[in-house]
Image (cartoon, rainbow, N blue to C red):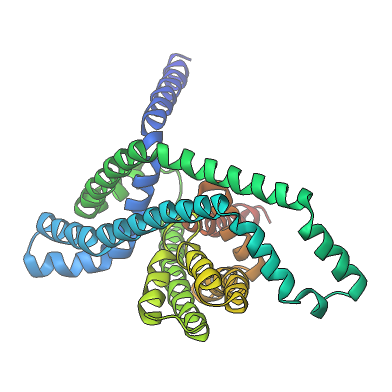
Length: 356
């Protein structure tokens, strides 16, 4: 009886301290998760490099520096460009509102006679009358003002966000270094306290590893396709530096929350106001329907090559993970579903088959 009381007390107090530890780690959860993801991708390279330099510490340090130079710095640069473009967009909208450019834009759209191509003459005329009405002008003006205010609100919190970004980047790099250096020790520690067969633990670990690799390949594949498709669109509308814009589209595809939209949306605005209304409308439709939408098709298709779960479940795991956890959910969603499938197979093998 005394031993059971001791056991329950030990489990309760351990669970309590574990919960406190988790609460303390919650502010660092995302950089820690990113460090785990990067460490899984880099670990095979770390093994080979540690043999070459004859030391885990030096190998982990070199790979962490490489990640800083090739990932963190370019990501920060693209993020800075996106912020600068947001500021420029505010100036464009503000100047357009002051010059009543929104009224001129509506008049241009009416003069293009695009509505007659998709609607009957009666409905097209009604829509034209509504666009030309003061009610629609006031609605559009109110929407533009709300958009400017929201963007200004985001920019006012920019400096605290920069500080948080720098700190989380430091946490990410520090965690990545120690996971690479002491990864096997962490794994063995977890295995000792996991009440599962060693074979099953290995199966779950392999599933997580394959899922992370498939997600990384899917993200890179999406970036390449979006960059290529974006380059084609920029060439069609006759933009200079289409190659540079395509590369920027590739890099921005990794930047949450809008990804490639950070590039093609300002490009569409510029095309509409500075080059041609036809090309501007085309660029808006092309960017929304093709460049951004292709993500939902290419990513699951590439990941399906390395993950053995139905396509529709993979699709919902990516989209659901993104909506639930943010950008890191692109990785967490598939990991959760593939691990769930693996655990179900283990349950079938260890429990159901043993009972029959």
